[in-house]
Amino acid sequence: MIAIGCDHAGVEMKNAVKEYLTEKGFELKDLGTNGEPCDYPVMAEKLCGEITSGNCEKGILICGTGIGMSIAANKIKGIRAALCADYFSTKYTRKHNDANVMCMGARTLGPGLASELAEIFLTTEFEGGRHQRRVDLITALENK
Ligand code: RB5
Image 1: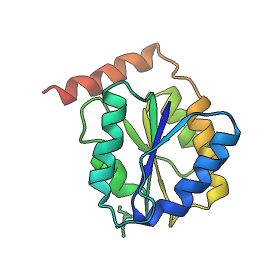
Image 2: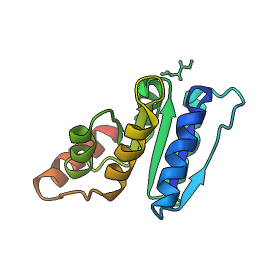
Image 3: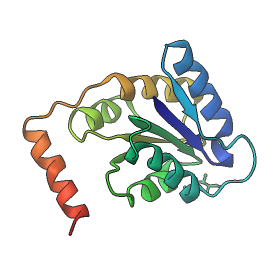
Image 4: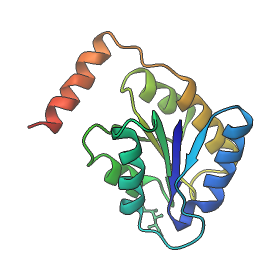
């Protein structure tokens, strides 16, 4: 299960990405918002809780720039959130960082690119190996 959530700036894009991924066969848990004003740190905490509890494997967060969501999500233990705006970074944040949340900007990306980036994020595997050691070092930082 994949969690998806946004603030009021990201509603249209969230719905477009959700529709695209659903057509591709992904199961999505839509946490809103669906129009009502929503502070992005509140949504980031809600979505990340779905991941840290094990309810969802990965998450997609959308706000105006994607930056607020990524800053907030990365405060939560166990979350590795990446701001994604291009194909290469999206692919390699999965392969090398084992990112479990992607953040995108509804005011910086179009719905077509955002949808394809989400598909890349959800279908690219973590490479492990030397990258596991580095991810473990990130986890160690969280525990300091
Ligand atoms: C909301 O207006 C906007 O500040 C928010 O969506 C986001 O861009 C924050 O990083």
